[in-house]
Structure formats: structure tokens, C-alpha cells
Length: 638
Image (cartoon, rainbow, N blue to C red; front, top):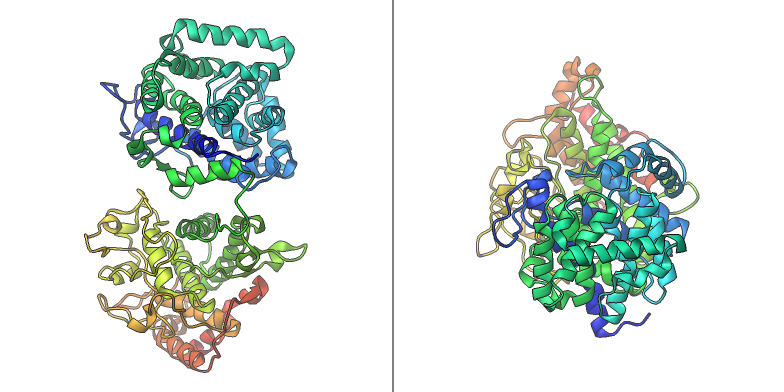
């Protein structure tokens, strides 16, 4: 459907309006804080959220939006499976606030194998026999109103399918159909008509819902405090909107959200439900600008602009070809890095540092493999034009993954954990990041600028024992490169206190990353020394490249350097058998310099690679990284 300017504005307001209502209601959920005067984005609530951070309502809506924004058929099994996997990914991230019904379904579904959409729906249908009909599906259904703006029947079927993933009770499904259709009508026609969805319900339930809506209008918001129930939640949201209908535009939005929060109980959910419909009616232009600028949250610390883009892509059937909606901006680069960081943390979770040998070679090997898999999965082919595409090759995709690097740079990242097992992972991740930067010829200045805005590390970053973090405390900001989006700072409230502090000149006092240093790899740079000017380079220049033959050696070198103290060698964790070997202990210290010299010598004989480079994961991950030339050189020193 071709959208007018007004319709596009209204479509863009759906997710943003929901997020505003969600973040406004978070502090007051179940009486977490007294409501004294106008509601404010204070944070806190049940999940100890940051001010402006949205909760599970918008988080789950974002899972749906990330699929619908691709242009995938909302009635197809692929879309259903993708949304189901998105829910599982969200659940595995450890959300601070999650409904009981949703938790039950996702916990059971995570133990299953097979087509996840159908499996999750089956589990949900089984759970619905208990008679529970919570508001967990209704709270996320606003975005579904955009999947087929010209077709109410498709909208209703999509709402039913997405709702039934976790809430298969007919009352939950009906409420989602009604609200999704109300959103669709508001976007297309610019009017509030919650009864537009009644003809889409089974005939025997239409009169019942007509009465529910009439009660909401007659009794007013205060009558619907038990709003954990999906019917009551819909009544509460509609009563808040209807009772303030004498207002228009931003005034109506603020008054209706205030009325929704004043009801009490599940304040964030009721306000999120109301906010989605209000955003659909008045658009981005009618939402409070000061509140829109504050919202942020999972996934990847998205902000209001990201929600607008997802909503517009959903409404228009996917991003425009070649638009680079995914893959061409700083935030997308940060997301890919964030996905890899989470993959590394999952890898760490499979290793018990107290009972298992810590083999740094294995960590590095799996780190590079996992990075390729995650990047190919996150940035799928449908999002990018051909010349910027990450691809999977062959039937055995996990064995044959390969990719062609985009041109806009890839950031370093750090995992802010302190135990011994994580040191190896941290080294592998940072080493792989730097290897990617240089092997694929990324512009060092671009990479540095993007990385400075990315904080995927945990809350321990500011006090991490990782010596590389202390090495960059006095590193200055990279020059501007004119990259698209370079003028807009990425607002990430999860930054550590030290990395958040920036002076007016743009210098970062403690950015937990470092710029690629060019062809020279040194493990002995003193704390506070400045990076080589040739490493950062001028804006738009590319870092030196490396052939695949030395990638394993380079990763191994960087891994050792990443765990070495500026003044005292701190070797990679060794296996128990290695710990008993004096030769191994000598190699862990003295071998570092030998490895660095060997790699520098290899670099001097390399021929730079021009243009995008592509190879498979098999070439990335040799059967044993320890057999690389770096280890051979290290052994010669023992």
C-alpha cells in the first residue's frame, strides 16, 4: 500500500507511542512508586529500569517488528518461526520483567527442537487449558496493525498467529485482533474506532466484546484495576483514551497516558497498549518530543528512531532495496558486534572454569567460528544490497559459512568479566575483532569512531581487570569521517560510568575499546602511550590487510597481547597439564615477544588485498590454532 505523508507519520508513531507509554508506566507498576502529579520517566519499577527504558511490553513488540520489518509474509511459517526464535532469544537474555504465562511457554519451548512457531503455539494451547488469559499478547500487538494496512483480514489472521505463540486463549486472541485492527484503521483513516475489529471476530463472540467496550466507555478508567486480565487491560486502555477524547494531538496523548497510569496495577502494560493506538492516531508529530527522545531499551539499546524505522519498514513491506536500512549505519554495526558478544557469553556459559581445562586455542577457534555464524544470521540477505551482503553457502551452512565484508567498518568490543575463563574469551573476542578490522581492510578511523559509541561489555567494564582497558584510558577521540550518521550520537545508557564521561571537545576519558594499530602488533606498549598516527589514518583510508594464511597466527598473537599486563606478563589460561610444565610457564612469558616478532616478519612479506575479501569458516578455523606459526615460534624459545 502506498502511504501518504500523513499515513506514514501515523504508522511511524505506533511503536514509538507504545514505548513512550511503556517507559512512563514502568516506575508506577504495581505501586512501585507513588504517582504524585504527572507521570515521569523515572526508571525503577519491577525490573530496576533506567529512566526512559521500556520494559517487556515493547521488548516483545520489537521481536515481532524485527521480523515484520523485513517484508516477510506475516502469515507464513517462516515469519512465525522467526518471531518465536526472537521471543526465545529475548527470554535467554534474562529480561528483568516477564509475565507468568510467557515465562512458562518460553521455558518449555526452549527445551524443544523443531519448527519453533508450531511448537510454541502447541505449548501455548496446552497452557491455555488452565483458563488463564493474561495481557501478555495484547501488550505487544500494536505493531501487527501495520503488517497489512490494506487488508483487515490479513491483519486479523496475523494478530491471531502471533498472539497464539504464548497466549492461545480465545479471549487473548480476540483482544489482539480488536486492537490490531484499531491500529490499522487509525493509521489508514486517521480516526479512533476500536469497534472496527468486531466483524473480524467469530460471530458468537462479537456481542460479548461489544458489551466489554460499552462498559469501558460507561464506567471510566478507574473501574479496571484488575488489568492483568487481557479483557480488562483492553478496557482500561480504551477507557483512558475515550475519557480524554475531548482533547486532541499531544494533549490527548499525555492526558490518556496519565489516565492509564492512574488506574494502577499493571501500569506499564496499560499505558503501552494505549500508547500504540494513540501513536497510530496522531503519528510521530503528535507525540511528546521530549519523551520520544528519552525512550531506549532492548534489543541493542535501540532508541525512538530505531522504532520509527521498524514501524515504517513494516508498514511499507520491508526496507527499500539498497537503502542500507540494515548494515549501512553505525547502530547496525554495533548490533552485530553485540550479537557476537552475547555469543561469546553463551560460550563462556558452557565452560566451567572450576572443573574444566581452559584451552585458549579452543576458545579462539570457536570464537572465530561463532562470530561468522552470528554475523551471517543477524544480517540476512534480504536486508542488504548484493555488494554489502553477508551470505551462507551450501546445505551445511554452519560448516560452510562465508561472508563478504561491508565497507563501513566493524568495531572492537570487550566483555567486561573478570574470572579466569572469561579472560580467554575476552582475549579471543578482542583479538578476532582486531583481526577482522585489518584482514578485511576496514577504515581504522571509522572502526574506532563506531567502537567508541558501542558499549557491549557488562557493568564490570569500568572496574575490569583487563589490562587492555587501562591501556586506552588516555586515548583520544578519532577524527570525524563523514560516515552516514556520524553526527548523531548513539544514546546508550548502559555505558559504564567512566566510558560515559566525555568532555565538550568530544574526548572520551575511558572508552573501553582501542583503535586498530595498523601492521605493527606490540604486546609491550606502555600505559598511556598514544596510538600510531599511521594506524588511525586519515578519514576514509583503509587499514592494512592480511592474507588468510596468517590469520590464525595474528589472532593468537593478539590474544596473548590482550591478556598481558603492560608491566608484568599475564599469560593465557593454560590446561592443567600445561600448568605442570616449567617450559610452558616460560613460553607464556618469553614467547609473547617471539610471537610478536614472527608476526611482524610475516606481515612484511604479505601482499595487501584490494577490495572485499571472502572465505569460509573452515579457512578461518584451522583444526588447531596451536599449530600456527606463532606457537611454533613460541616453542622454539622454550
